[in-house]
Image 1 (cartoon, rainbow, N blue to C red):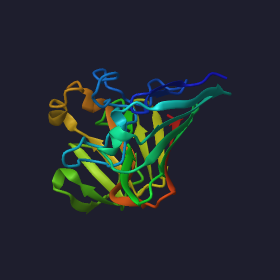
Image 2: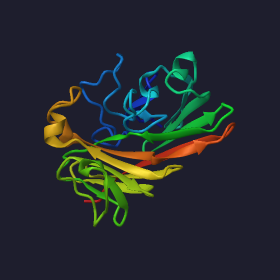
Image 3: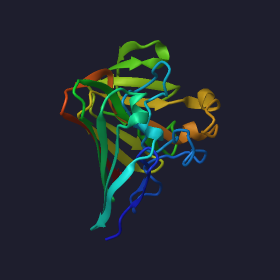
Image 4: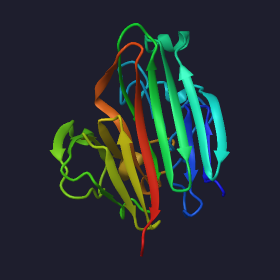
Length: 267
């Protein structure tokens, strides 16, 4: 049994590709202009946002582990699936950025129909450690104007394009403009893509929100590592612990799990 096309980099513990054999396009979008080897965060795939999600005064957006080198602890293929574990842990360099002792693991199991991802935070310190985090997943879509995101109806969301005001989702989500929303207490959604004739189901456990993001046409032109037309070919749907932090006790661990399933729709 053949395994899906799958790529993960030591830089950032970053998954850049997952394409099941029966799919016409990869499930994950990665920009052709992404900085795969340099100091900049990779645009696309699944960036690991940790130990904070979003901006932080005087620090990099979405934390620092997404640009640091991780260790590959294990990688194997078995019966059409790929299993890997990567890790990174605190050091003198990270202590200046985040004054705690910790270890982070990323465990992935990817087959031709489902990919399960676990981001595991271990607090190795003597004090509690507050974290926010996300698996900032970029999904490839055939045409942003034709997709529908189901499963968020009735959920309250924070709209970051409208000064952080809160609204309630009415019906399915159809993107028509720049979108940057944190859906509170949401853990499942379905991405319907008629161009690629597939449904992508996203489920999370251990998080408290789903984030939906697309820069749309005008903002996309200002992002150096995206082509101007790229906004039309991806949407981010992210499993997250945000905006409220998790206060992780000494010696404890926390898992943020994300399951992505791909099914071909019946025409």
